Length: 628
Image: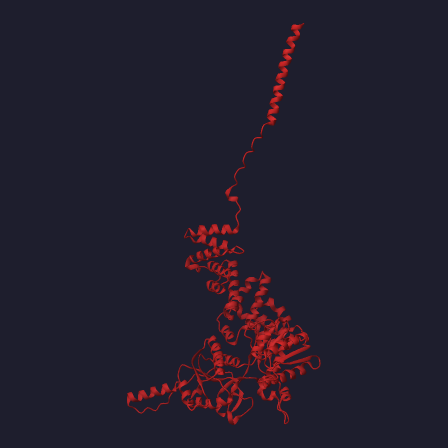
């Protein structure tokens, strides 16, 4: 039994050892350090995200390494797609653009790229140079975008007529983008109001004005209708028959509302004028005209607040602020340039009509209505162009007045493709005046030529000296007293065969046939108010006329009284005119039209001609061919 027992115990012990060893192995495996997880696979390089700036940089590097234009275009487009491209990216893209075929100007797409690069560098004039011309493209999206940029650039930097033609061409491309089309049509309408007579004649002379022809016809029709609802309806109906399906039809409801919408009449009109000091006469003549129109039109329904600025800018500044504090809803004045500059710098929302040009035009609610020698000279230049003139002789007195009118005439005349052939100064009372006028007309040169031929041929030639052949109009400026001394010398040298145009200063404002007989043939711009055959307000003129007991400043300075009357009319309706730039004001100083970019009111004066010492309405005729 002992042996049996011993044998069983050994087997049990072996089994126990095996079990313990297994458990120990399990425990050792559990206590061992964990095996590292396998490393993740590297992502595909093609799906690595990079910023648009990095992408543009890489594309620039690739494009710079090859002469092929395709990568260059891709790189440029990537730079143009950035919100704010860095300066070095812009420079490199611009350098690549210059390496495209034909220096980047070969195709409309490339020119558009170059223009956009210039715009991002704030070089809009360069952008205009790069983009021009914009020819029609089968890529309608590109054509539309290029036209839009071209029109924007021309509106800022180009002639108004070119900007109008570009925007008119763009407009049909925007039929599915109503908001953009509305904005474009607003710009077209402002440009139409900006065109002067010479630009309109240029547009009329185009063989195919395209859409622009319909726009100018609409502008004329609506301007002629004025604020009359029935006339507006008839004018638009006639226009639609002539221009069916024209894109301008979309603007008609807005034009109707702008032309015929009512405005509140002014309740308190402030007037800032020099009523004392050296310019008191001018100020009082203006005030008499303003007051006469105000009380005629508004009676007791409004108040007229009058402030004497004495021609001093500090007083003008204080008066303007005082007027605002007193609740003025219109302001007229001031008159003196320094005062105008001071007032135009004030932060204001009240419609204000300045009576002189500020140094910085187009600021705030300020508009300009003025009579100045420069305005007269510009009117003369436009008239000369309308007469068919292209080469002018300018005769002005010595001094600042002569410098101002000569400069204004030259600038306006040359802008209309005219050329000032010669410019001469004179002293009316000089004993040499006849010789000076003859020399200006080239008579001395003609006489020398005749003498030379006589000497060379030995013949007794009967010949009259001729005026120079390189002029076809004479512009002369000066006071009536001076020109009565100078013009006879023009007649003596036979210059009256040419149109002779002067500023309104040639006429003193009242008939003086005995004194003015030698002025026959001189044409000049003037206020209809001074001429019975043209004056639309004879009753008002009689009201302001001098009596046996009182000589009014309005009678002594009638042109400034007329300006005051028109200033009141324009100021009262300024909110209406601001929303309807096609409207014109037929006043007693002339017909006034807006020039929206400068906020000037431009006067279309009446034209008079001296005939047997009397100023009579001048005929509207072209220049007759000269006989040399």
